[in-house]
Image (cartoon, rainbow, N blue to C red; front, side):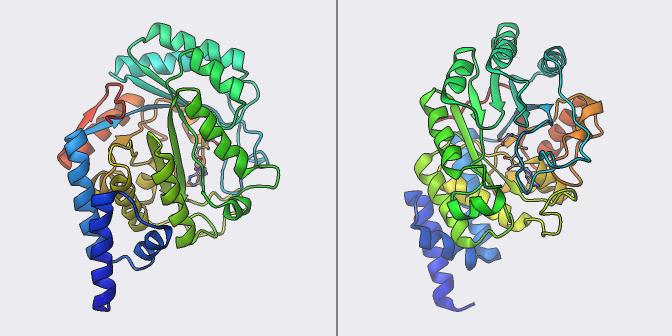
Length: 353
Ligand code: SAM
């Protein structure tokens, strides 16, 4: 590699650590010209800065996949409306509560209720579920990840006690958004939802897939600029993985290397951000989640869904952790984190600003 590119890469990594900001052009340059040395440099700066804030703690969030019924038809997603070969389920409020109780018994103090956009979960029903969880487990945080809803809905759910909301923006480029979603879905609405969630008082999670179809370095640079300006409390990024029953079945999966590279960059952009080493990352590589932590992530999300349902929440092919009991999932993650010198922490794990 030409020495001027190398020295430019070095300048940019230093600048990122110092100023937590680059221009979109610089982000794109960093991505397009990245090499092993730059990745190592960024990872060591990212780990250093994360250690100053979180030490060796890795936060856990107990994930409960409450429904795979969805009115949306995202081209990448295995639970999209038009997948007629998806066997659909919805947990009852009692089942959701049982999962949380089991998780609470295992020490979890954060529950993430995630699902497709399932109309059964009206505000009334969801508020009731949230209030019951908050009444029963007052020291636990309740996070929702139920897609796009109205401003009033977000407000009502916050009043019922929901603390956090995860809604990946998926891509910060409107044209690219249009290539990942059918015309009835709107980039503007997704972005407005994120603003409304923040206004309603939630800790907000955004995020995107790495290596989604048609994604370019310029798109990723827009994602990074969005993270830099919006400063979400959490940022979920994971590789795109094709699902055989979707229009994107024939596309290549996103790479481990680029995902880890971007985890380091995002840590440096927004040092306190809660950054999960996702299940998708663990799916494309046997130690993907560990590599994510070593690149700068600090959250893992073990599955607390009922064992019999886990395979049905198949967003992409080959999803891991569908055959283990919740307790086994936690033990496995605990051992994985210890092996790389980290400590799994089950408390609420709020962002440390
Ligand atoms: N319905 C909610 C929403 O839209 O935010 C939550 C559920 S949605 C299935 C959760 C996330 O899964 C999406 O934000 C998307 O980034 C991710 N996802 C879906 N299909 C995927 C795939 N094929 N590969 C990787 N991630 C995928």
